[in-house]
Length: 113
Length: 117
Image 1 (cartoon, rainbow over the protein chains, first blue to last red):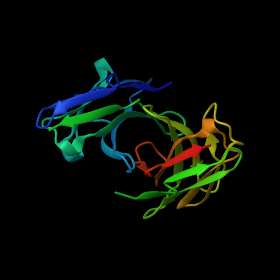
Image 2 (image 1 turned 90 degrees about the vertical axis):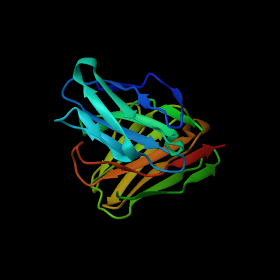
Image 3 (image 1 turned 180 degrees about the horizontal axis):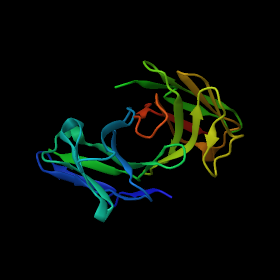
Image 4 (image 1 turned 135 degrees about the vertical axis):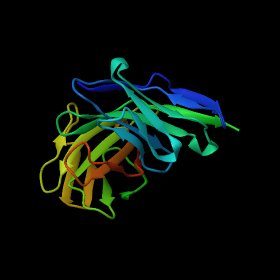
């Protein structure tokens, strides 16, 4: 069965500082990996996704993620965080019967001004 | 990106009553819609997958007679929580995609907060 672990429940960073959110997955084959952001009152928004090819993936809002098969990881990074990045971030792995998504428990990001 | 709406955004009901939640894809045809449940500080748990015109496929542990899903058109799916009880209180989220593969992006609605008294 596929699963996703996000070890950090809460992370606080200062505006302008760099950010890395961790994600580890378990999946029997080549995974399809996603990062979503959830802001209050809004639906989940796709930041980026990895299916194959270049292991460094660029997304929207200046985010990027690197797929590391040897570590079963897909960590999300941003060089300089903005106050508007404060939100809940979810990592997800796709596949399996019905092409479903399995989500991690999320990381709540707080940005200090 | 494509837009998915949910109605209502929040609802409070008495125990024993039924509640219907609508999920609409506003600018695309959704061949597949998903219903998730999200508990506070927890992940999204997939409840069921529905394809237009066919019966929904429920995840293990989800009572299909309690959570009725109808996907009658390519732009509308409904989730009815029947005989709701306080333990059904949760945040329900739908998503929709136009393709059938995991590579096709799911677009998420803003969610519906259900409180059962």
